[in-house]
Image (cartoon, rainbow over all chains, first blue to last red; front, side):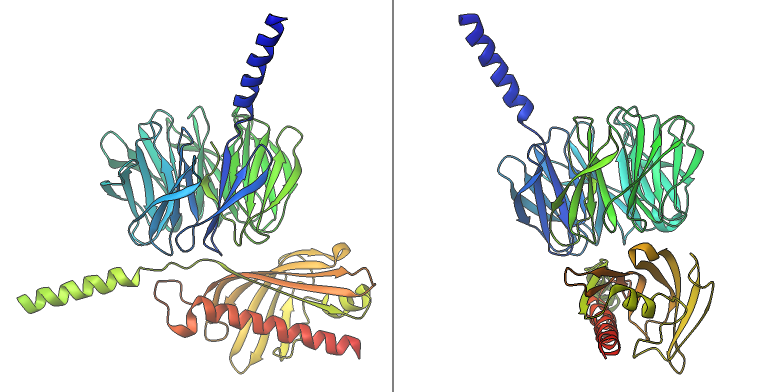
Length: 314
Length: 174
């Protein structure tokens, strides 16, 4: 009996850990808010007002903090995941858009759309540490899991800047498809993907050789890319096709498309390995997709113009 | 020297200031219910090569019919044209998706415009038209002049939608 009770206590405390599901932070560019979705209930539990026109988002590795870029206001808002409140707001350049966090949570990376600049901040006191010139209209940014490289998609240069994070400089610039916007890396770090809005394709780059191994045809105007947690699938949001494309990583076979609402944009995989969250800019919603069955399982109403550009779930 | 320096400083601050706001994509959704069956409404709007039902459109010329990639040029007045292409055409669902591939911002103060034109049957057997567009303002850099800002772009698209939809209602309910 005692053992049974002890077992129950262990089971219930284990359960409560399991139930502590991460939040999804959705930037709503049209109404200056962030919708916080509890991924356990898949409901919006809070709506936070931030600086004008929030677009980019980056949740840190531990999930304690979420950073939001507002290109219109030229600021970064810092959200405390515990209190679900904006704890700080600071100015960044002229139009901060793509935003990401270092693999040790210490640095925040922000690219400026107008200035073609990468800015590196201390993620705790928000001090500006480095400014590195990249290409024209930089959008997506992503860090290599080894912490040594950072990649920037330069939309109006059709290029990728490779930044060495030990030297804090651009060490390589390579060609991508036309108008690359969103970027993603496989969890292994082996593959880099860019969503090329202008050529309706995804460039697949080998991160060791920095060669494009294949360019995959997607739906119209791909915006963001991500991979499933197990690195088996590549997932692409097709802005003007109102769909999500799926490919097998490695064989690069297309697995088909899932129809969603109008202007699907931001994408993040859930750590449970089964769900994918997609924001819809036009329909002001977030879709929850089952990535095992490849189907839409829930629609969640958010705010006006949900973009959620970046890693919005950890 | 001092004067030059001060001038330079003021130029720098103007430059910084002019980068204070970036263009965000805008959207407009307009709906109208027409007291007519859906097939009747669809018949009057389904031909991509004829948008003359719109009071602002004087003539439509184009090629490709209702095929994907079809083009049309709408003439609104002397020298005022809009070139559009058909991206999706789904007659079974009474809807199509198109974009503007060429327009002068003096004609409509917008950039990178795309739109769905959709019909739905209401529970009363009437037809609801939804016309929705996504676009950027006419001036793509910062600090736009008033006639090319977000507000002007939204006002222009709204006015096109409202006038077109009310004209359709008038024609189809006669």
